[in-house]
Image 1 (cartoon, rainbow, N blue to C red):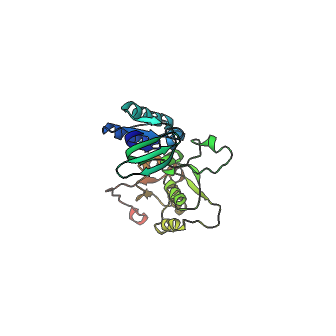
Image 2 (tube, rainbow, N blue to C red):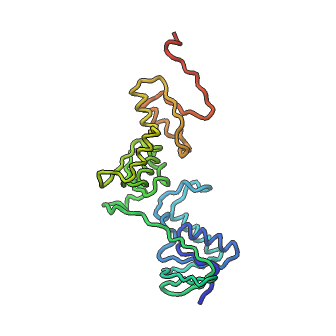
Image 3 (cartoon, rainbow, N blue to C red):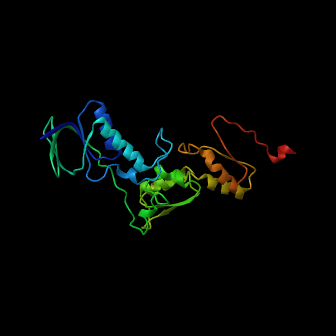
Length: 253
């Protein structure tokens, strides 16, 4: 029976990262993967939100992780883990080909996207179809988007996207949203997008509009101002500590 310090099940980004840290700690590491390395990130055409990397593809990112883990000494085998046995200090990982003994097991099997099984859905991934609002929201800034689903995750994603997108539609198969408390909370705090605020300012015929107290997830809020000013030209971003002297009509005369 082959013996390892660490057996990692799953060669996605988490599994390969664990393998890198394991071998750099002087451990004998085995990385098991049933199909292909990389996990979900392989299907991402562009990655722009990883610190230190301006832009890369998901496949290139995963390949670099794989090569790094392998070059450092991690052993990688394409086998399906079917059973785990806890024998106290030592454990066993049984695959469809072999049995391995190890001191520690890391399960990093990841998750799968829930496809809608629509025509051309697969071929449009990265060109309008996305499964991660947090990852890809910036790619859709200033556009109309739709979120499919009615649970908490769908509503949270819709509210997150409202920071970036011109309009967000929620498409749900039932006549009631399962995560309605999220919408109620958003209404309670009177949240709206920059574009909705611009429409309100336009209809109210105000002299100026200052946008404040917006989500901290808007790292580059100024990127949205050109489209905001298309709706209401006299719009400005507020900042912490900024003060503005307001002049009213009766004070000007």
